[in-house]
Length: 474
Ligand code: ADP
Image 1 (cartoon, rainbow, N blue to C red):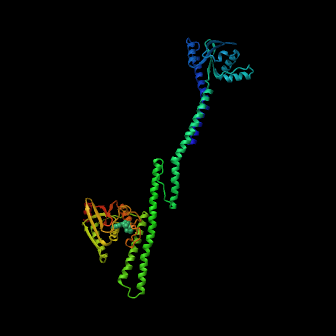
Image 2: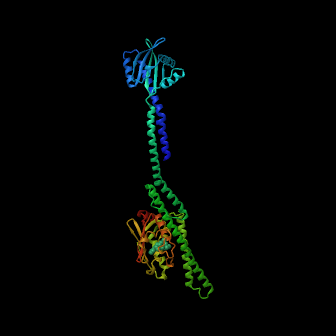
Image 3: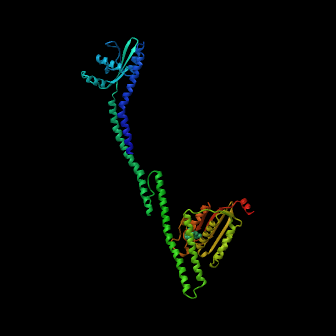
């Protein structure tokens, strides 16, 4: 900002102080040369005198016309526009000298009075008092029908020095004011833009070190405030995932250790103690191994999703038939544990989707319903069509979910029950897998739940088009 101000000021000083004098001199010089040529055109004409008056008044110059004869130079017209004109006071020898110089110069000669005086004194002339303002003498020697004439114009070079002096004075004030404004502006800009950005940068640098405290209340321009808010939001999200991931590692290591300890323990008991090789004990080992296997599957699935390795392989399939089979399978699996699976499955619901992924969604939802149904031990599965869509939901009558947890449960690693309990030994990944798969299908999904009353998890998929369906079945 200050560099820019200095640049502007240097430009101003150069233009106003250095160039002004030269520009002014060049302008008057051109004008006087033009006037001299205009006058030359009228030499000998009837309105010659009028032209002289006109030029003298408009050009603010004294005009003298000489006639040059053999040895003498005599005045034939004289117009004194200003008493400070020098031309009337020139020594006739000087006038003669000038006329010779002008003729030798191709007719036109323009010289500053100050330079003329300098030359005069150099050539040994008596010292002359310099006028207060310098003057420009323009001399044009022309040939008329009856001999040679010398047109002499004497114009003031306006007091450029005093103008420059005033300007310089003005510019000093302007420079000081500009410097002050630039300094204040730089200060405001730096405190309003640079400082907040530095602040945000500093905070951002700490993110990789696990320091997620970003200050969202940065006061600056809207864009910077937005940047700060976005970063602080991102930092919040990262810190959440980071915390959940740490919890997950703690939980998973516990989850892995518990079944492993059980398997080893039961295995050893069955090996070492006679009569302990009972089907119940074998079932414990099978259950624990199943738990381990589902945990590992979840982890593999989520790591695949995290790696962006999730693709849809759509096929047309009868969702109703798949649901009948699935519910049957669950009934058989939980036969002995007193679980009741009721269903209301509408027939011939056909969809086009990634069958194995949608089945995984169904499994995750039913498993959750079983895990969180507690003493009620009842799960209800519904499938029906509405308009061009099918609606699937799983209803349980268990623990339910508190309103404040509802939007978080879809997040990776989120578990409502932070204190690890065997009854809720999930990985915290099931619903985030559900979310990824349903998002991949562009499906609508959601949950209704009330703490202590149970939950209903649902999703919707478009029905497969009728005509296409018929064609396929034919
Ligand atoms: P988890 O493997 O822990 O079940 P999920 O991602 O499947 O992980 O679910 C996240 C959390 O949502 C669970 O820890 C649980 O607290 C809650 N939740 C999921 N399904 C239900 C349900 N049917 N009833 C009550 N709470 C549920």
